[in-house]
Image 1 (cartoon, one colour):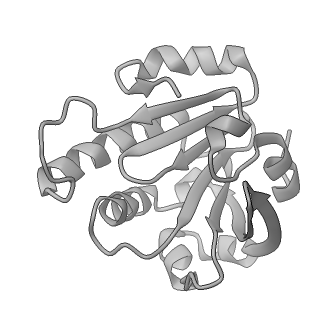
Image 2 (cartoon, rainbow, N blue to C red; image 1 turned 45 degrees about the vertical axis):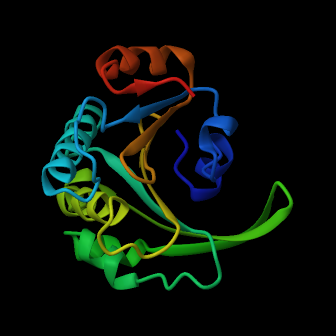
Length: 192
């Protein structure tokens, strides 16, 4: 079982353009068949949010061990510790909050990535609030900068990544595991 941040980062390549680094990734478009011109429309946001929650609950159970990771990608991004704090129900889990910073090269640009992470149970994470806030932020309300959020299922080797706009990526460690879930999410699946 991968349970360290370095193990997770190495196994799943949790960086931008994740589907190019991971061959076992499902990209889900949660806006499929929604007929709205503006992504900031409340009905559009609520529909995307509801679909994201359905996918999340299909993957995770409340008693499972997870690692919650927030990656930020620029020096000028004002990362808000209070934001992570507001998503954690079990305040003892906050004692495990850590940071690893590294520089990587993507194409011709060197980028600093800060990995904020902590371990907890799914029930310790206020995932309803997290998903709702990320949906609203990415679809036009309160945009705060470039960041990615990951929830790693430690015992199942599955990564749930909330992407920009109405997309989520689900990353697996093997093709069998991916195909098992792919059939559940066919209505949102988009080949990359």
